[in-house]
Length: 173
Ligand SMILES: Cc1cc2nc3c(=O)[nH]c(=O)nc-3n(C[C@H](O)[C@H](O)[C@H](O)COP(=O)(O)O)c2cc1C
Image (tube, rainbow, N blue to C red; front, side):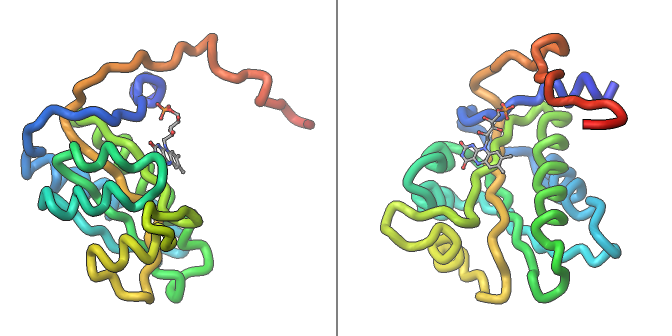
């Protein structure tokens, strides 16, 4: 059941040192490209990164929370195209989330790395840092980097009874 998949998904930041199978890379890209988007504009582009030097450079995209990327075999960088849609953030967040879920379904581990509104270790914005590492034009925004690899950790999934049911309302607040 899909809900079981959703509750067993966790962020994975530790990976085995083996490359992600090409069929799985294609499946992850398919999941991103098939995502829902407002008015079917699909205001995104994806970059699959598997060159170790680039992954190492990207691991310094943030002061905190991106270092594990240097030990990941794959990163999918989700770009937004703000000129195409005023809701590109929502659309690219959905694409990013679908990639996370597809990774879990493929027995891969994945973790979202936030780039927008964050700072790189060298003081630049994370976004301009990633742009310069990957030669991304200024017309594209960097929504997320999804680190992917075969999991080398296995955090417990969520138990239904432990979820924050106090955040749910019915009919009226
Ligand atoms: C929008 C967003 C940004 C995130 N940014 C980072 C990040 O920069 N680095 C990181 O290690 N994890 C990041 N995460 C992962 C969260 O820390 C993680 O989802 C949260 O702790 C809940 O854990 P879980 O994914 O295992 O359920 C991000 C997740 C989301 C949805």
